[in-house]
Length: 275
Image (cartoon, rainbow, N blue to C red; front, top):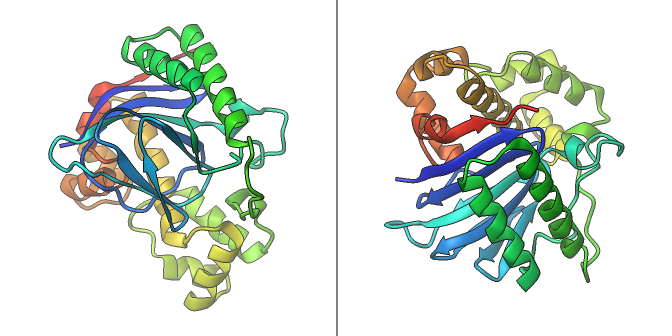
């Protein structure tokens, strides 16, 4: 079973160290995403229909809202990964919202300098850091990875994001989903309320946002679930019910498919760093 070795939520986003041995569902995040292998067997990461090897000499970066999936190679013992979820507003607060964080390449070289920085940061996360020390360390690491991703990068095609939506019907559907995200939401009803047929809704939504309505809704649900797990003491069963799941087991399956572990395991390791 996959498990969380350390999880910290703060202004920067999330810093996590996971031991993972199970595949995820295809999913996305509002945050940028940096994934580092720090122990055990290399894994593969699917990002936007391309598969990349994540090993000790490589780094995988995922831009906000890019669909991706984790594919382990060792299903028995798993491996250890240091994973950063980076808030775009923290990374570049003065940039245009939604366009402030974009890596130049999905997979790039893990230089000797970056390797030392990655291992130092992962050790700091596992060592119960203070906010000031972790914030500074991660700022330097993220900046270094960002710069390295743009070294000799090939031209990248600009993708649509949920913040660049121009069609008023898709904006309305996003507003409806965001008002009260939950597993009970019927996307067909969202389509009708937005004035679109089901096929047109699905095509237009993906064209405008780069993700399917189902994936977008799952992302909103996961954000609510993570916030409730780390910021409250509400029982996990109640969190699941509040998010529209008919049973705790249904919520647990959904959470594990998107995070790789049970919500009880995530909550056990998670801490919030307050300013």
